[in-house]
Image (cartoon, rainbow, N blue to C red):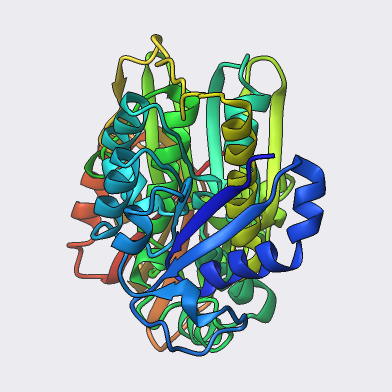
Length: 432
């Protein structure tokens, strides 16, 4: 029996969860895989901090070289996050002949192509299940369970913080700021939540899903990203009145020979499964040619949730090592029907528009006239009751229109003297 030695770099929240599982499920895992997984060394900048698990002091180090240069360590688990020094540690591990497990979606989104190529050259693997959806096994499902499928679209609620905020606003009838404060208080949001609420975290995860499903690494600069910070309680309530929920949706879908890759607040029909995903939960809705529609759903945060996925990767690598097998991390075959990434200006969608205007005659006519000049057709319009003295919200739902035309029309509308605040446009997604 060959035991497998593991070195852990990053003894934070998720790292502590990995240690807990490996400690408490040691015999359980050994009986399942026929080998013992031995946590040999743990590296962290702060080795004296208080944690929910305890380990022998001799296992702790603040020098990553103690793990990377140890010839007895088979698998390096990187859980420090960020680009540097995490990327350097992974490169060194691969060059030293070690397999890698990581949850680092930001690093893989930016440097994944290079790292996967290096792993392949060195005959080693990078596993990264925890990088998308925490404990939801979507990466393994796409990579293995759906290997014979060709994909038409992926739609994901990929950030628990943003989903919690939108859910709280809807269920508790509270403002964005109150919901954000509550998320921070409960530990669901960072002190600086910008990466979450502005959609960057979701974009990193979407890039990995696009690579898995469509075989293309998309640069972050080519992903249209818009966050939820401008969504108000009135928008939540107005959307619900007309049969939709607002979700921060990560979208990748084929449109002819083009691929749309975008993250933004989206109106989702109430009857669609994604509309019912609440709290910190994540969900990935996949549409493929053989199985049709699949929904992967579960908690998108939590120390044991993410740690469960990390340990799953360790176990998979352990099986491969013991069997003497090398399976390329990702045997990706690009979808040849996709010629290019569609720019956001070129997409066509239905839209929800909300204007805050002076309560004067002719305002609605002026707005409608400008939309008409850009070939934009209105499906419905509703002038709401005053929210403050002299100011009324106007809510419109538009027929399908080109994004470029919407932007030009709104730029002109926002300059009208009767518009009190910048118009809000939310895309409507109905083609799942």
